[in-house]
Structure formats: C-alpha cells, structure tokens
Length: 306
Image 1: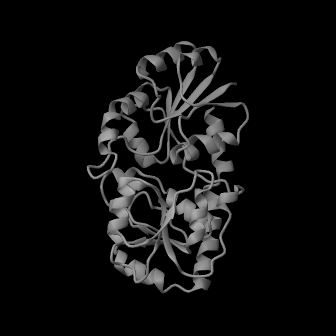
Image 2: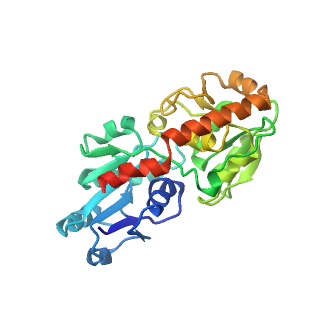
C-alpha cells in the first residue's frame, strides 16, 4: 500500500497530525505541496490536514477518488474562528475550502468527539485519533525541576488567553514562542514576561525546560472549546504540573492537572508550590500522559484506518 501525506510547511499542526506520526510508519511519501503529478504516482491513500492546496479542491478530490485513491482529511480544530482570533480574516477566507474538504473526503480524522460531532453533518465517516507524543523523542524527555518558575509555551494566536493572567503574577513568568510578528510585539507591550524565542517543531518542547510549572489559560469562546488538550500533553510529558482553564478541552483528571476558575488564586497557589510537590506532580502527570497519549499506541488507530 502506497500512502501520500500532503504537508506544505513544518508547522505545529503538521508536526502533530502528519509529520511525526507518519515518520514512525513505513511506506510513507511526504508530498510538499500537490499538483496533477500526484495522479500518476500510484497512491492508494492520500492524507492531508484541513485543506488541499489546490484551486479546484472538490474536483481534485473527485479525480483522486476516480483513480481509486482513498482521501482522508485530518482536522484538529474548528473551521469557524472566533471574532477575536488574530487569523480571523484569513480563516474566514478558507472556510469554504475547509467545509468542502470535510464534505468530499472519504473520511475525516479529528482530535476528539466534541469536534467530531460538529463534523458529522458534513461527513458522518469520522474517526477520533487524539493528539499524542513520542516519549522516546529527545525534545520530550523530562526536565530537572529545581524551582517553581511559571511559564507558558504556544503560538501567536493566544493574546487574549494570556491576558486572562495579566496582573496575577508577583514575578515575571516565562512566555515561549516569541518571534518577529506584530501580534507578539503587541503582547510584549501589554504583558510583562520573560520572552523566549520560538524553536522549530522538532525542538520546541525544550521551551518547557525553561520553567517548572506550566499554565494554559483559555478564553471561553466557542472556538476554543473545540481545541485539543495538547498543552496538558506537552507539560506532562516534560514532567511539569499544569494549571488549565476549567473548560473543554481540558477534561483530563490526573494528578498534576489543576483546574482554574480564578487565575489570581491559581497563580498565587502555583507561586507557593514547593519543589518536592512540583516534582511529584510532574512525575505522576508524565506517567499519565505516557499511559494515555503515547504516540506509538495512538498510531495503532491510524494503522487500523489505513
């Protein structure tokens, strides 16, 4: 069986949903971009994230299917962005293509059932394949905890999420993922923190080594409820406890996960945590992540579908 994975860029989404999972499998061809040449490459299955980068996507998918290719669309969050999302205009311009990809693909993979139920009216052939991490990968080895520094790691779309914690700290937190972008400069002007530059997708987990307690604030808009629990996985596999917004997608219950209703109180609690408690929580949460979100195990779900 010949499988093609369509991935344009080395983004976080592609890393978690395509590049890393399929790098652990045999017989996979990565297609960086796509054109009509793919019709002659003899693929049995094509997997892509969200949309295919072609002008006439519906016709392209139909032509692949006509040639006996099974088409799988993988999607990790909702296709309708919140009004405050920094990529709202861009996201809206791709909304039709996202819906079209879901509707005409043979099946859809997604991160959890909450999002799958929104996909169902467009394509009833959905399958949940949760995000997962490879505990053998170098960037996901646990850090040595020796303090109680608080930090966050993520992308530039989280301005409003982080602002939920503004004024809650008595000392600067670490904010990782910074790069030259207007949205990051906007955040830096508004949110006092120790900013750490972004790293490539094969190393970004090392940002978690720069703090001891992770936080994951999240505004309560509808779009955010369809995100995944990835931040729990990232912090946990690094051996760090994490304070998360008390809302979906942070529904996991395990030692080392603290559900937050009031960030002022939560940050105060985190700042008072002793190293021994942090280490104990972190070890337990790492074990929980490895037992429930081990990429080697989750990949078996992909292989069942393939």
